Length: 285
Image (tube, rainbow, N blue to C red; front, side):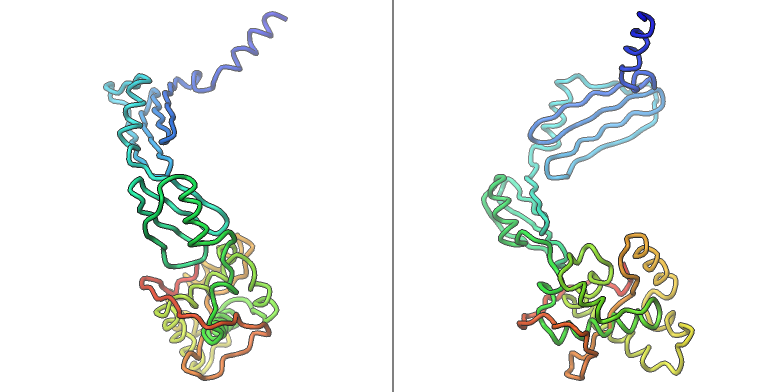
């Protein structure tokens, strides 16, 4: 019985001991640093409270040694002394720096929000709610211009029905109030609504498909859709892996006043000046 207890006690020892690995770590309200030394490698990683930090990995050359607790604390202070505070909720994430400068990324919204505020956890939360709200963005809250929305849906349906899997009006209706970041198709439509350059690319692809003499076997997909069939197939697989609808992009158009295919749903109302940004492509994500 005593031998069994002794063996159990040995098993309770961290597996790092058996692996010939030693670890030193330190933590404060600024973040955390961890040093790892084994027979084969040495690593150092410091992660600050705002998600920033630094680290390194190297193979053993005989010169590496683990720091003392005091040295670890000093390194953490050095790396993270200017760390900001990070706060997040379903609607997005904000980071505010000690000087009050902040930047927020709102879920489903392309443009970043920035400015100055009161440094601190409460100040960060106030900024987050002011810029992003408390709930994740949906197509209904992002695509507030009904004409642009209908155009983007038209593009998406054309690409889906021609090159991927059919997309019905009922499926579009079901996406109106889901977080756009949780669904591939909703994300494509939301980007189209927000980004004029992307919308123009989608319109060009849409018109290319419409002008094709035949696309019965998806012949026009590789030439009309930016990225070609390979990109389309990769995105289709990604969508399948996440359980999201497998579509490429949306038919938009008609921002020039021509009629856009109806979706069977009420397009988000209230016209709102569309945000514009550069750098988006037609690749399906």
